[in-house]
Amino acid sequence: MFVPKSQSFQKFIIHCLFFTAIVIVISCEESNKNQIQTNTETFNLDLFEQNLIDYVNWGGDSPVGWAYAITQNGQLVRSDGFGNAVQEPDGTTVAMTENKEVNIASVTKFYTAIVVLQLLEELDLTIHSLVEPYFPDSWTLGPNMDHLTFAHLLRHESGFDTGNTDFDNTLSYAGIKQAVEDGVGVPPPDQADYDNINFAIFRILIPSLQNNLPNAPLANLDSDQTTQSVYRSYMQSALFDKVGMSNIDFTEESNSPTRYYNLNDISNGTSGILYGDWDNKSGGGGYFMSVIEMAAVNAFFEHTNAIVSDEARTIIKENYLGLDSYFDGDNRELHGKYYGKNGSISNNGDATIGQGVLTQIQMFPSEGVEIAVMVNTRGVNYKTGFDGFLRSSIKDAFNDAFE
Image 1 (tube, rainbow, N blue to C red):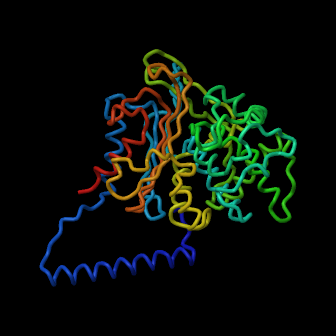
Image 2 (image 1 turned 30 degrees about the vertical axis):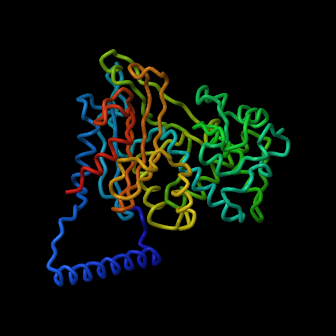
Image 3 (image 1 turned 90 degrees about the vertical axis):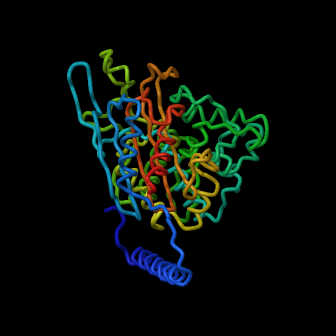
């Protein structure tokens, strides 16, 4: 059970039940009065779960390992794991379960955005406040950095373009500092581009924002090690501790860590790869978590104020901060707005050989349903075919669960 039945949460549930009861009574009265019957579709949780399983395995090429966790109204309601987290040519196997950690990749951005919104609220700033005062004093600011706002970073509208490759360099402290010094050619948001540096930079900006809180210990913003440490510890205390999860970090499990494959690896006798620790390039990716832990954050975000205020939640959703904006207006949004974030890491652009991970969180507010899914295998054919990610299959699984 994710969400503690605190007094405030109980009031929330009671209010919802009371409101639902009123709606039912009114609807029944109107129905009896006018003798009108409706055939309203009803969401079927069991069908959603089965659809998900069927659609992931649609192409007859099941992943080496995958897992999911579904929450509804703040509670864990379904979870499972399939296949192997480790399946090596020497015969070594480790089962994939819903508690096995993977590198969640860009889903990390959603968590970074939550904490940034917390800090902006505490400092009486908005997402449209300028970032300039929070760069380290020793940094040289390049062209148009004086126009940069927090919203530009959180929406990938800064104009930074480091290519999303060579992460150890482009997302390192030195790489971020150099990108700020180089600046961008046009003022944001006129050259928007999805780039991991937009969130990796918060590894420095979150410690800087924290420095401005009353009685906060001052972090040395010129130190790569210090900013890594402060970012990690602040994220832990501001987010994961409040969700009841300790020691969420950027380090692989010490015991048989998950490996990442391509579908062809098993028949070819190829070993899976390991990602190693991600402290030096965190912010936009790199947390190692299970789908159970990812689902817990979903539930707390949607159904409590423990990690986000109502106002901040609305701002995050309306502006797709740390979320994927391509969901806005998607023709698959058949039951209200859907909100999600995908994660993806591959060691090769060729889908037939690239090894890596896919992750997805998805929120369906109309039914109070959230889901976290991860696959440790590239090259899988999902139901949607044209979409090599999990997002479309999950949305179809949800839409097809109404009957």
